[in-house]
Length: 346
Length: 46
Image 1: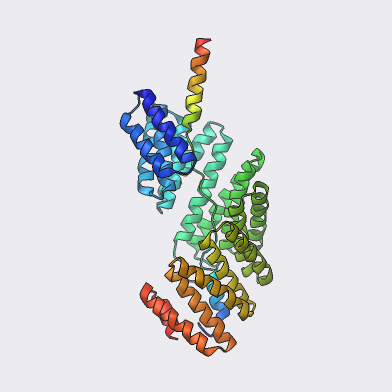
Image 2: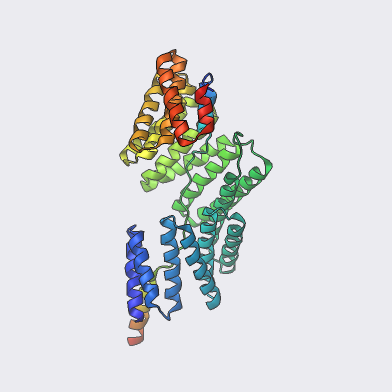
């Protein structure tokens, strides 16, 4: 009986490792049905089942199983297990926007890691803390304010996020954990960006880029180029921003990721608009439009039409400008975008 | 507005499209646990 539960759980673990989370969930659920008296095995099953649901974006199920794991580890007095369950629960609560509860979990994760002298655990708890404060800052509506100019509540949350990421960096540098440094530099760069510290943001994203290259992690490299482009825009360094976005576009194409390819084209279109190179802007906005149509992304299509209308207006191509403005109006009505509709009518 | 492509482009770029790194989830490996159990049994038999 016991071996059978473990066998099912081991197969589930193997499936999750290769990214087949749906099949993994079925095997883990079957393992729970069979049952086990080995509470270490049960804790691992709850934990991995929670993680599988997390990867499948079923956060209420993820919450349920990480909560079972926390209750179990507390009952058995398994401190390391409790720390891990708290970390996973905190990440899940963060995604659900339940930031105050997530903070309690992060604190418990950090406290236990300190109690056990577990440096790796401390670093991970600090990273999670940073993510929760960053998400908390982002979650508050900033109604059109510029980065660095948000209401005090948001700036406080973002400053705390930066403090936690910086504390994490001290430990992961000490541990020589380059992969963890890469992740932290990326998120710290985005936090500096929102705080309006664009020079620090660029420095962080450059570090992230360097580490991504060390690992041959093309997705992380693309993310870094995209984030570097964003920061350069706010520094007024448009040519440099365009160069970063072009690299991001090149990698997106190599990875055959159409959605991020569309985003890179859109960013390039906007950057060339800022440089008043409207022909190139039109070229990239058209590329964006074609991909948005392929992906049946009506909101993206609407944005592309709006941008194309602007660029053609700037070039004096009034017929083309009118064509795209009408398309934008039609899509805004369809998607219920009131502000888009009002802009299009102008 | 349509008359001001620069500010509209900046507004779009500011629209929080930066990319975050993935969350790090804690793992409790059954494979490791099973291997340890197996080693302990073998040690007991020796």
